[in-house]
Image (cartoon, rainbow, N blue to C red; front, side, top):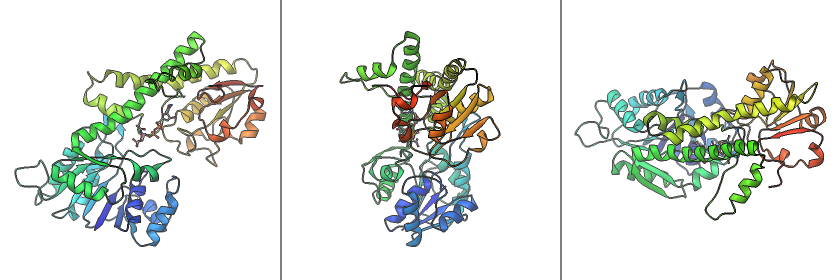
Length: 412
Ligand code: SAJ
C-alpha cells in the first residue's frame, strides 16, 4: 500500500508523517523545492509540537519521502489551501492544480480524498476535473459507467498546537461521493485514526466542517459582543460570563481582540457565499469578530491619551496562546495599526518568536522581552494569553494602564 499526500503544509505534513509512522509508504508532493528538501533531510518547515520528531523518524525509517513529481500510489490525499479570494469568493484553484498534477498517474482502483476545507460542491468539482483530465477512467457522478476510481471528502479538524494528538484521536467525517467511496476511505483512515470514522455524503461532510468552525465563530462573536456591551454598561464581562456559565446549559466562550487563524475567520464566508440571503447570523458573527480589533485600538488610544509620552507594550502577536503562528492574527494587526497611527512608542512582546515579522519591521515597533516591556511601558495591551503573561502578578502591572482583551488580570 502506498499513499500520496498532496500539499505538505500544516495539515498535509503531519498527516503524511502519521500515516508513515504506521508503516505505510508515503510520498509527499509539494510545489515548494525548499519544503521538499527540508522534509527529505528529516526536518520540518512548520512549527507544531512533536512534528519534527515524527517526521524525522518517518524519513529515517524510509517510509516518508517528499517530491515535486507525482508518482503512482493507491490513495491520494489532497491537503492544499482553499483561500477566500480577495475577500469575496472561495478559491479552488489549488485543488484544481492538485487534480491536474495527479491525474496523469491515476490508475483504476485508486482512491482520491479531499482533506482541504472546501465549500459545498467542491468534491463533485474535483471529480469533474479529474474526469476531464482522465477521460479513460470513470469517476463517481461523471457519466453512467460504474466508477473505477473512488473520491471522498474527509475534512481535517485538527487544532493547531495539538495536531498530532487530534489527528489520531478525533472522530472523522468520511464523505464519499458513493457508499463505496466511503468504505474505501474508512479503510484508509482506520490505519491511523483511533476516533470513529463516520460515513456520509460529500456535500454533508463539506458543510459539517464549515459548520463546526462557524459554530465557534458565532459563539466567539457572542462573547465579543458581550464584552462591548459590558464596557458600555460598566460591568466586568469576565465576572458576568463566569456567573452566567454557572447555569447548567450555558457555556459562553471567551472574548478576545478578534478572531485569528486561517480557518475560523475564513470558513464561515464559504457558507455565506453559498447562501447569502439565508446565512444571516453567520455573516453578522464574522462582522462582529472582524470589528473587534478596531474597538480595541480605540481603547488603547484612549489609554495612551493619558500620557505625554505613551509607551505601549503589545503583549502577544500570535493568533492565540502558546503558539508562534502569526497568520491572520488580530494581535499583530492591532500592533501594526497602533504603530501606523503614531499612538506612541510600541513595544511588542512575543516570547514565541526571535525577530519581528517583516510586516512589523521599519515601523516604530521594537521586539522586547517581557521584563523590558514591564520596565518601559506605561500602557499594557494584553492581546494573547500566553503562559508567561498569565504568570504575572498584580505587582507587575499595578503602575500601568492596562487594556486587557483576554481577561488575564480579571479575578474571574
Ligand atoms: N478565540 C477566542 N475566544 C475563544 C476561543 C477562541 O477569541 O473562546 C479565538 C482565538 O484566540 C483565535 C481564534 O479564536 O484567534 C481561533 O482559535 P481556535 O483555537 O478556536 O481555533 P483554530 O483556528 O486554532 O482551529 C479551528 C478548530 N475548530 C474548532 O474548534 C471548531 C480546529 O478544530 C479546526 O481543525 C481548525 O480551526 C481548522 O483547521 O479548520
